[in-house]
Image 1 (cartoon, rainbow, N blue to C red):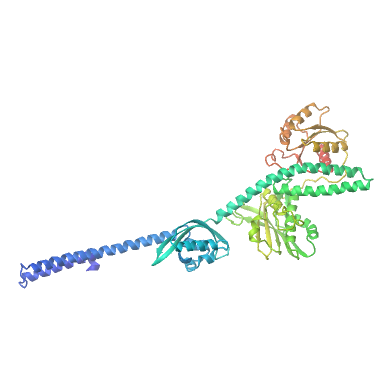
Image 2 (image 1 turned 180 degrees about the vertical axis):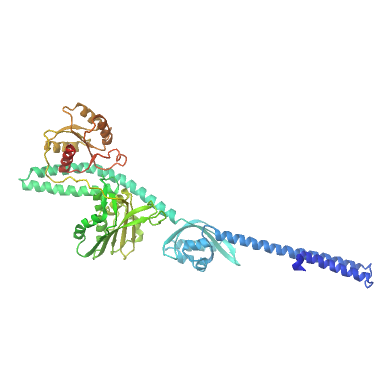
Length: 567
């Protein structure tokens, strides 16, 4: 009857049957009709049956609603897109699927039963244990940052978590809800690193620009002295020693400019395999016989667009860094291969999808401690002694690679060596390399007598030296201190000038603006731009012009002027 009519229906029918039975008894004469006891008994039975049925039905309805609520909240917890863990004293009692995924556990069952302090990174374990103790005392905990070790690959995951005490399975436990901030922290670290590099780069670029002006004067006069004192051995030796020291200083400024991405560049299409082959002999000489050098530049490695001198710097600095990591000898492998980067590649997230050339430098050296791995590209950061390094080698590599639109990653562990992987955008084919002017102490004479050169330079010492070099080579020189002065001199020169040699960064009117004005007033007049550092804002404006980088040697300047006049 209960199954057919429900609890309340069954109770009502039971009461009805009871009343009916009594009525039958009365009609049969077995029980007096006016019996008060019988009537009371009948009413009690009917009411009790109805009441009992209502109570039972409400109880069943309550249990059904409770089960439905529990199922709803269980589904909510399991579908929650953030990690949720219930633990008692750090011992995990319950975890939702997102928590298992975050911690690298195959399932929630593999996470249940583990101890949270045991999974914490050593740097976070003390904080985790402290918060567990506070939860035991019934305290509610605000948000805090923790780092845990993943169970699957040993990597780390950064979490921001809040915790509250809750009753759970007959006792007091703690509910911890977390948010995975690993990717956010990585991006913030990269942003801080980029901002720090940009600030130091601005300083380095400015210092290198002024320093290059001084080196231009030192190198220029040293070469002039060496050229004019061939018969005086002592004076020539002094000039050569001065020149050697100045060239070392110039190499240092080139590193500063490469790091700050302000080095004057002459990019062209470069076959990476050919670069490695050309450098092999020099690299073997530099790293010494104790290190086994293996170079593998596959035929299909590809072509990149970069200043070839800067690519040489990248390979050289990485090779020397690897050499210093193997004081007792070892193996150095340098290779290049073509790779394709998909848009979903987590290792190269900042690189757009496309074809790249991966240049790899792998050593079997001492490796890099994780504690300093984030700082190795910082300028002037070094673990070497003052005699062995300046801390600019890897900073230079970082600047060059970033300036060429590439990226660099490091894989290393203490005692297991290091692998530096440089990713550079690949291009379709190589173009013919522009001829480089010969350098040296010899200063060639002009092709035609008395060509006139308009020299524009705001630094008086550099202008005086450059004027002497040009006059020594047989040119007539008209001097100007900036772009505005140059336009006045250009209009007044008689006979007219044949070529303009101008600095790039100048007050009132820079070299790029001057070149535009000259193009309007004297179309076809050759212009050579000389600069101590590259200014990205002006690069497009000087495209197509001959560009010389300071410090410039006299012979290189004369060769560039002669070539421009010949064309």
